[in-house]
View 1 (cartoon, rainbow, N blue to C red):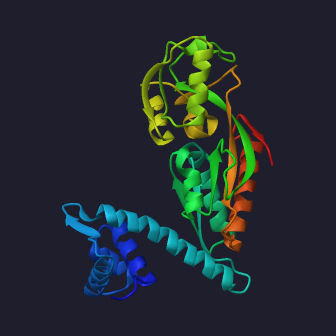
View 2 (cartoon, rainbow, N blue to C red):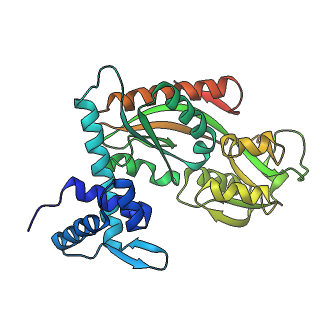
View 3 (tube, one colour):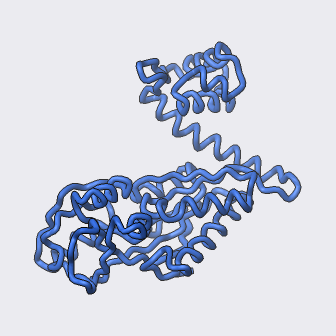
Length: 310
């Protein structure tokens, strides 16, 4: 029995990402039989089947998916360790992975990518956009270098830096007519709402606000990410309650209206990083650029309804 090695993990991860042996072999610059042999050795070593070939190409089994997630973390940690130890002159290299809630990702991803590419051309930026409830888990696992997590409570092993207070807005289709003032619950209780799925602190606050007003929300549907919530609003199916960041492009282009709320509904955006994993020079620089971009977006009023906390 031979030991599983980093090359096999890299090969396996690439096959899962490409969903195709031939394409994976091409991108890795190895012959396909050699790639297949390495995957077979890995399966033999672990005693489980990792991949199945089907109509949609090569797919991971349940065990394969588990290994893929761990492989991503291991390969990233090796990459950041290498960049910590091998300083190629003054050039900063490596991959930096950031976990963002989808609402924050819509506002920040593109400006951040452009800025990192301009200032750190040898750094590859990875944005992991997932439901906010799962963000801190990825930091603890080492799957991402840091996250911008909404309403993050203190947790062992994680350092927290509060960045922003974001006010929440009622987001509706442009055709919806509502009073031109700060709204109270009664003003929009008749509208169908599509809201973030629980567990979600923002959703819990909205539910509490309805409860306090002794009104029931007309729940149209629930979704765990803004990538589903915002198209539903844009289509006129329902309204939602989210920070401005979630719908900035649609508000700017007039497809969605952002209505201010007279309720004290807001959320806090917090930078979360592991206290045990060392930060590479690349991660430190990207963190700094990230904070700088947030400041710029708030200052030039692209990111509205915010108060900077750092």
